[in-house]
Image (cartoon, rainbow, N blue to C red):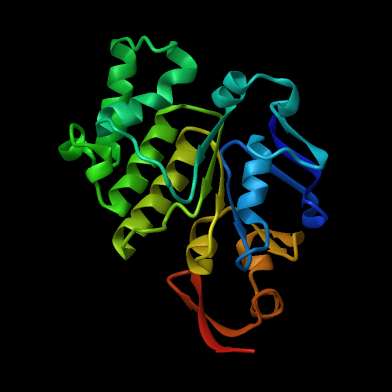
Length: 255
């Protein structure tokens, strides 16, 4: 079973943002969506989650049409980490993460729920700030807390919009390593909208490259992330360097 997006389109007024998107995400897979600003990566995630309603097309999860199930049922299958939180959480880090258990607990956590929250806080290195006010954290710490909340939700699929934003280099790598580990060990399907092509290339099982609201190509990073495709999509000349089996792209000039 999988998360399947079929012929998905979305319009703002008369402006077509997404055009006939087709993709599949299997459990245990980490899929990255890349493309320039304004190409529709965030809109795609929101349509999959039904935060935005697609103009056309279908999204199914485990064979269920997500438009025909309740928001609570969707929350048992799909978790979301947005790019930014413009609103405040007037609560502790622990309680913010505990919110991820709501689809399972009806506001009445039991000792097992508490153990799950504590385990995720430890995994994310957040034990020392668990009783701190969420609103007082740095941008990077807030990002990790929201990721922890999504992980404790224990869904089949996890969608993340720029999860490495506000993080320094070390923590970017730690987050991507954690996501890849969770995908493989917990059999979670993970979809990441991301700008950093090197992180996408290094950690993804599959990459979807978008241009003009459409999927230009998709497949294994080594096959679709080429200097030619990057030049066409981004209008940037790059050269590739391979080190320790990983390919990296170095910008040369804007075209």
